[in-house]
Length: 149
Ligand code: SME
Image 1 (cartoon, rainbow, N blue to C red):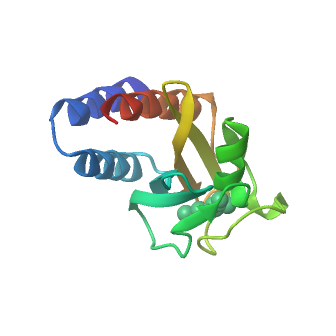
Image 2: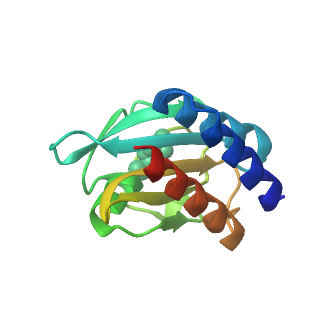
């Protein structure tokens, strides 16, 4: 499954579309092909401001277009530079609810020239759905993204 998805991801990155279209197509692929990915989106640092700004996404619209560094799961990853896997969002104090249906979340930072410049954020309607396999796949995606920025 993961190898097939990697091939489809490679195909998207090889199609030489705009960065915006490429990011959208990645979101769409992951959202449509992985049953436990119910919201897939990218946040990037908003210029020099200490905040993240929502870029391409597939899933329900969110109120969290801008997220200050430190706030929510995404804002914490902007500061920690570490992957954050949340098996149960209700167990988190520093969490920004996007949809009532969301039960779990994974956020993986994207590094460019060693600097944390953004992240991929995935919400799931299942409790505790994320495995090492998800982390491997999503880190692969983040590396590919950093190469086109
Ligand atoms: N839940 C995130 C906010 C973004 S939405 O999930 C799309 C957080 O706590 O940072």
